[in-house]
Amino acid sequence: MKKAFTMVELIFVIVIIGILAAVAVPKLMVTRTDAVIVKGKSQVSAIRNGISLQKSRNMLHGIYPPYPSVLDNVNTYNVNNQKLFYFNDGNKSNILQYPIYSKIGMDGHWVKTANNQYAFFITQDKNASFTYNNSTGSFDCNHSKPQCSNLLQ
Image (cartoon, rainbow, N blue to C red; front, side, top):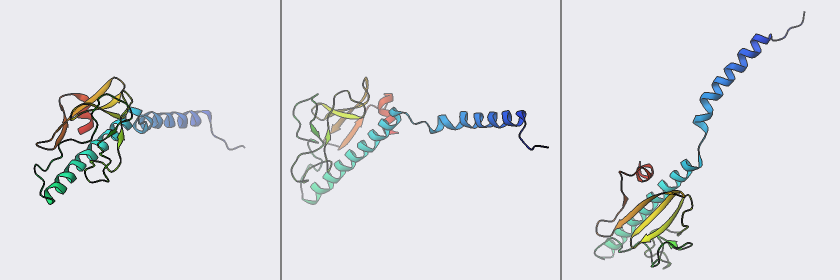
């Protein structure tokens, strides 16, 4: 007498594996957009921390108002390959240790859109617009817009 699995047992095992895969795979699948949002969250946090660091530095040196007046020395808007949040002055007033290079409409990239205004592109057609207020030091966007709330939750 040969010992082997019956057809019913094999089908039962395949069904169980299929159910487990159907439950597990969607939870393990991270989309590109999720990765871009996580990148944006970390960059917003780094920018806010850089603003806070500059405020502390300025207060320590007796410079008032303590918040930086601008976040970089970029004077042209909606241009690729600009060094954002960076002054190139030996880290005296840089918001970030290394610049973020602007790329218009590219997923996961920033662009300067106006004086003290920036946009982070989640996808080519969806972006979150951030405004820097140099009197309060806030770097924020409109929380009622889904692109903004995704980056700040």
